[in-house]
Image (cartoon, rainbow, N blue to C red; front, side):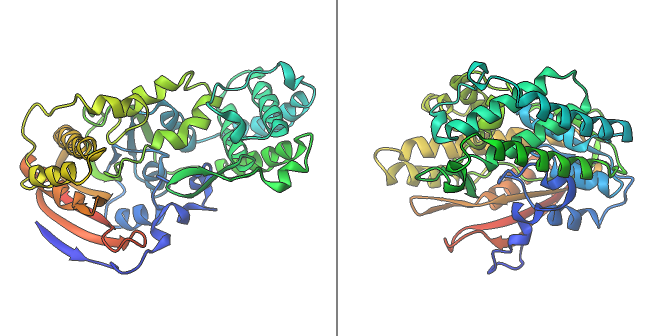
Length: 409
């Protein structure tokens, strides 16, 4: 296993989710776990368009869309049903009839919404919902949602719903300036002055129009999207390239950021469902997923040389949470081991892999995720494992982002 250091002293924002702003379908819905389209393009330039691309942690669909834009066929897999829906909608080739219908439906939704009695409409059972939206904004969102769902279905409805997701975050009190959601101390002053929530309708119109415009540009490749556990990968065909970015070993629950969309669109109905989904996801620790860590134990020894001594140090570093976090680290790499075993079975001989992953630190003890990925890959039979340092992640001098490369014999 070899290591190469590239651009290690720079944060390189163009290699993060921030670079996707304003780039067609990649800008349809901003989620901070998404990675840069530039990273994917950079990787695809080395491969023939006839090769099939796989992203087993597809999230918002960045890899698949980029692959299709560059003539590749792609397979995307994820466990979260909302992300599966989003990736399918983003990677679908919309006809001129469908985009025309979407514009007609947009006008119809706005006409219907303003006539609805907001006081009689459903709002999601999102905990502490009033910190997300003011009363006027909440009512306007309820009107828009009810109007969208009152129309006959079709792929064009997906464009309206993605626009709705954009709008509900734009008019919210939430901030996504880093890789987790936070809330402003007080509602946005500009929104307080609206009163009747009309600005929500204006934002929705602009968001959907922008989405329709980029939907009119066809994709050259085909994208298949499959809902499946990353530890038990099933694909419609074998792949030649893997380009992906799994959740990092940092105990940051992606479900937390996705909850507002999932509640509004009906993918979640109660809080415990979020915890159950996070437990199934690699690295998830929302709600019941955290409590279940207390009883988890690995069924077989993980083939990583230093995992036991390092997790023991983490356990001893903090009386309150050290043991829990040590178990979290072990389970994360146990799950990734099962993932690498699974993905090995759905690749053609000679397949090239690149995993974008960051290391992490618990109580000053650095977890070298990139090195441990390499050890797991080698143990399973992947060859020519190489690690490149892509960028510095933040002010913590120990944290970096890496590309871990390998190939199937």
